[in-house]
Image (cartoon, rainbow, N blue to C red; front, top):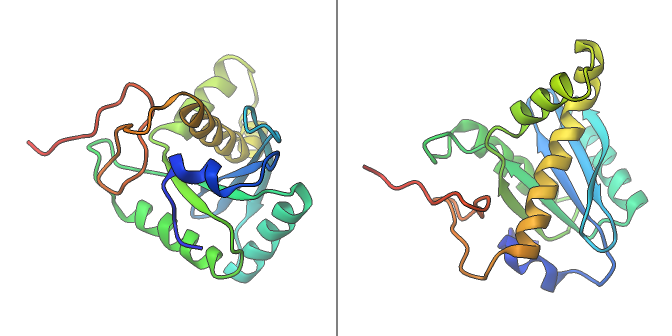
Length: 178
């Protein structure tokens, strides 16, 4: 299935079907799952990347096991709003995975999500570096998915978008060239 607008996602999903969030990195893919009402996101697992075929199989197993009906990818947009190589890499990963797993998917602007989760894990949870490394990617995926779920719940149809069409978090205006 092709990429769809985040706001169109609920129309494409069966009722009571969870969504899955993905935080795609060079070495890992953090996964999170929503509840069936698509209200709360929870960290799920971290897939340690090897070859794409193995990565896709691990993700497919989680999708099947949890009954996920849609995917929300974190899009690591640059602070100036531009899409760099990391965004291109995530978009390519999504297209490749779509070739194996035909689920609707959308993107969510994930600027600083991993940094926010790291701060939370250090400050609030007082986790050791080793333990943080084990949970940060799946926690970032939950942060991304929760942001998208909140936006779906709260956003009017004319919500601001970045240059690539990804919906922006509440309160963030699209970056405009100077």
